[in-house]
View 1: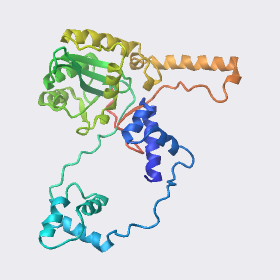
View 2 (view 1 turned 90 degrees about the vertical axis):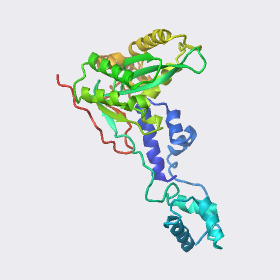
View 3 (view 1 turned 180 degrees about the vertical axis):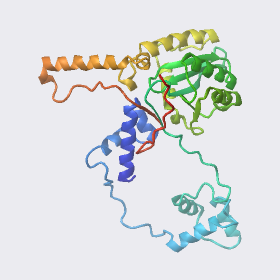
Length: 351
């Protein structure tokens, strides 16, 4: 990995940690270990000091031979075939250019392994980066399974989270996944929180309930802008994933399956009250989501700042630098770009 790639990885992980992610989990997503990150963070860590071979392998294809491999693989006859079929076909004609593995390697180095024909596979771009600077600007929602007592059956917990405050703003439990049930929940939450047209962006993954006709029509009627993760990419929706992880790893989460929808509802109601009103969330300077959502976090954090200032005045020798920074988190980013996020903010609700 180049020094620039290492520097970018460090910046991404630092941003993720500032937004409330665990350092180890952020490293895991990028495919590196915490020890590797620590090594990169050292002054000399951005340089690759490994000593490799000085010369290339003796049997390496020449530039002309590599161009011949690419020409064959991208020609009209073979552009839709993998090397495993190209090489035997050429052999049947008395032609040998290179082995299957060499074909694969040459094409991989040029990012040409997946599809070389005219009908290339569709690509899914990263979701547009979003930033919330106040409550009810960006919501994230998802569905998680809760085990039922009947083997192989589940109850489905639908839950909506405000990205800026981390407060759970709506939830429901059902026996199935359904876009009409999801649409009903979104509509109820929007009415409860007085959401105006063009005020809110709603982010989710690409599941059926998220993109169903009734759901999309409801969002259009409410003036809510939909935002979707890439297919099969769970970390494009990190806030809901993190909240569900907090829920299912909580000591109070039942180890036995739930007996009924009502049993799930009773437990979730207690969890939501705790999460919103008692849980000091690390992503928002350890205030409760409800206090942040309702604008009480600044007073709480200012009070903490004063407590630390008084403690330092009483015993200044305990601090070699400044006291802990209790400044409020001003903006929360969802799917930021690697270096310079282009923030997309929904329309602010007028006073």
